[in-house]
Length: 109
Image 1 (cartoon, helix red, strand yellow):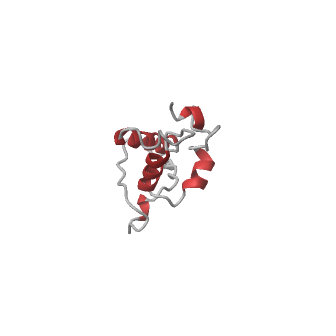
Image 2 (image 1 turned 90 degrees about the vertical axis):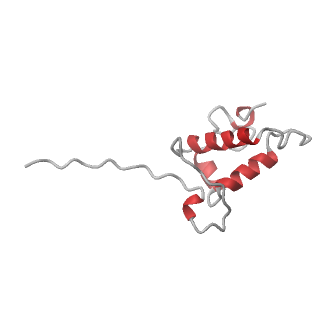
Image 3 (image 1 turned 180 degrees about the vertical axis):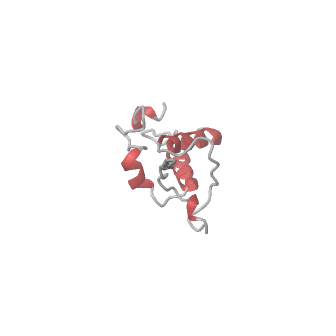
């Protein structure tokens, strides 16, 4: 079983909630990366009897969270610290990445 079976090939949703786009930001805004990891580790993979929850290696759960973040526009290679909401640094909360604006070249007179 893998995530795509319930969440779609591009995490767009299906049987399970979307893990990308507007739905992801609605569900997970103001959540830390650590809270997202903890939730996924405690609840996935899904099975009717709950017997599969938490059965993957920690590194696999970290890879899953990384994939979700990258799918939602976070740059590859970003280092995330898994902190809680009480952190004094709000940048560690999940926030939609801002698109970089291209600088306009000055025209020479």
